[in-house]
Image 1 (cartoon, rainbow, N blue to C red):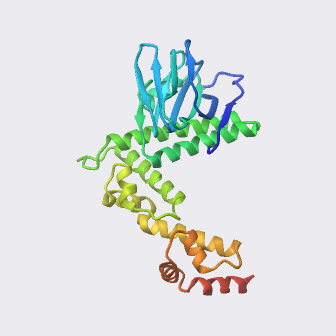
Image 2: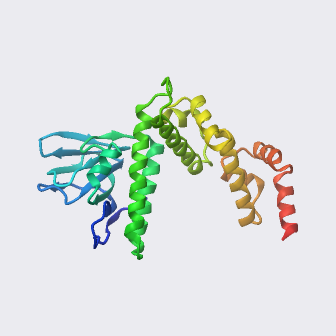
Image 3: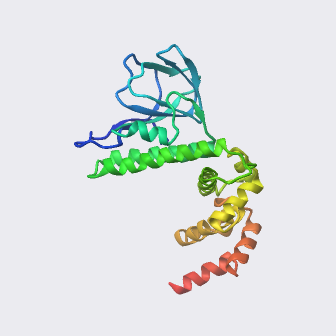
Length: 289
């Protein structure tokens, strides 16, 4: 969701549904006043800038980057930007016969402002974009597909909360700890997939998720069978091969630059993994065609 998008409405259900998506969208948010509240629950996510929220009981608070909250249906409220730059807000609204029970199950409390890391925010933003694309396509069955994505988004929020609420020093490993570990590994993997071509400090990735590098790496090995560094290297090698296949005349130096590596180190890593240099590999691939 890199550009301003108007609201996307989903068709209302023709039969009672436990959960359904009403709207999804992204705004460079302007002032919004709803003296009677909104017709359905809304999850609001701030990506950039800052705004101020006023609720019916005169409570007021700032709402800034990488924060989110649930605005319950029917609650009078007003919000508006206060930062010099645009206040970027994504949202999804929803209702259904089991909505209250689901929100309670996932631990999502009304009007409670929560924070998340930049990596976690990227995961949520991607989920909102997936729901948007379904609404944009207007295909038959899109409403049900949107519900599945919304349920997954609620589960991701729950797992993020578990990650923040449980420390690695817990003496007994509970089911909640297992879920938290799964979620944090997923977030770390997503970040590595999207930033493989950058100079990634793995210790910073771990600390942003509330873990030490050593502990997160152990969780990562347990899930993927390889370390975080090996995971990044595998992504880079796969991308390098894709570049060779799609750009016949690309140089090894350009390939290394595009995947975020120094040329000589890339050649050494490639030879270690493939048993030959990138040029030798490309030549063999060409001979097979």
